Each structure stands twice: as C-alpha cells, then as structure tokens.
Image 1: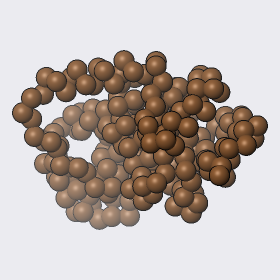
Image 2: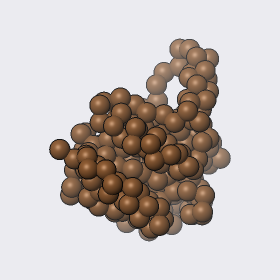
Image 3: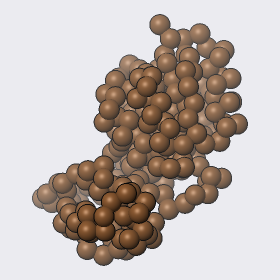
Image 4: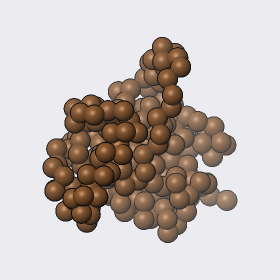
Length: 222
C-alpha cells in the first residue's frame, strides 16, 4: 500500500518538484497540495494522509501552528517539517508541536525518502545539520531543575498570542478573530498567568521560541 502524502508549501514550484520526485516511487503517492496554513489543516481533515511535508513560513498560520492543529485532529498522520531554518527555536519548536521529522530544503531526495520511511516506521528523523539545535535545547533544560511545567495554551490563546506578538493592539486582535475587546483582554490575562510573562516583549520572545509566530511574511526565507 502506498504512503499517502500531502505537500504543504507556499512555493508552488517547490511543491511541483516534490510531486515529480514521488511520481517515480511506486510506494509514495502525493494526494494533495496546500499553499497556506489553514488550507493544510483543512486538507488533512478531509483526506487523513499518512505524511504531511510541512513548510514553516506559510500564509495564514505558520507551519508549526498548522502542525499542532493537524496532530490534534489526526493522531495517525505524521508531519515532517521541511524548511530552510536550522535555528534552535525552529527545530525544537517543530518537535514541541508534535512533528515526527525535521529536514532542510537542501536535503537530497534520498534523505527525504529515508525520513518518510522512518516516520512511517514510528521513528523520529532529524537531519544531521539540525541535531546541534536539539542538543542545545537539551543542555538548556538540564539547568532548569525543579521548575514547574507551564500550563498549555489553548488554540484561541495561541491565536491571540500570535497576533499580540506581531504588534496588533487589543482592538485589532478582537476584529481579526471576531471577538469582543473584553474577551481578548481576558485571553491575554490568562496567557500571562499561564506563562508567567507580563510584558509584550517577553510574550513576543516566547511566541518566537515556541514557533507560534515567525514574525515574517517573507516567503523567500521559508
């Protein structure tokens, strides 16, 4: 049986190149493409693929948030993040969101196929160039003895935090999400309490580390 794949990348030419690669492999089948975050979530909901190849810098919602939403709804789907980013915050953010693999876009076709087959065997896959980022995070955690785990943010709280980190005022966030100003303010207070962060600068830094926002619409960096 073929591995059913969804490609989520806002660069149409990248998606086309990936589709062409898989057409030569009888056990791998591309069933759909998505060129923005919300559409990727919708397609996975409709098709329940085996694997999603997910870019990070996507319109609408970024690839890390899309990954979180996809895996909240489809536990059998594996997500492999495929990106140009090698910084620690992106690599660890991907795995914190539930990704099963992390590859760079300049990987070889053989490495991509290996990663897909690894995650289908219920193994994680990290490209060697990104291993250092994971070790950096593990080393950092070793110095945080005794700190309690932070309460997880809800999807709505993450949406509010994303817009807040991107510089929107409370009224603008309310308009963007179809909420009242009072409701947005309540969400902000809960976010601050859960994270124990009480400044916009601190919340922005957290949102970047957690992959909730990339603070960029520059598709050339994806």
